[in-house]
Image (cartoon, rainbow, N blue to C red):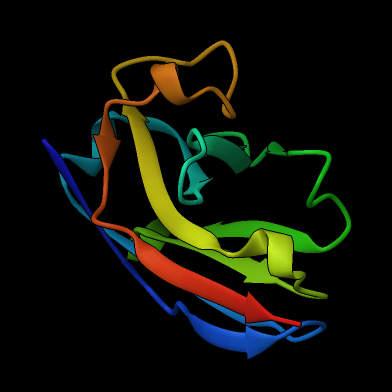
Length: 126
C-alpha cells in the first residue's frame, strides 16, 4: 500500500502562484509514476501533470503547459506541483496520485492510477 498526503492549496488571485506538495509513504518502492489530477465541481477528474518516477520524464495537459511544473525528490518521497500564472479555471480540488506495480501507458490517464490522496483545494479568483 502507498499513502499520499497533499498540502499547499489555498486561495489566490489570478496571476498568482502556489506550490502543492505530496508526501508519499508505505510501499513507495512499488511506485512507477505519479501525477497531479484535479476535479472541479460538476466535472470529471482530469490529469494535469505526470512523471515517470524512475526516469524523470514529465508530461503536462495542454491547458497547463508552460505554467505548471511537476517535480520530485525520490530520496524524500515527495512530489511537487508549482503552479504559476494561475487562472480562475484552475480552481479545483487537486489530487496526488500514484501508480504501483508497473508502468502506465499514460501518466495523465486517471484509470491508470491505483493510489490517491485526500486532495487539496485550489481557488483562483479573478
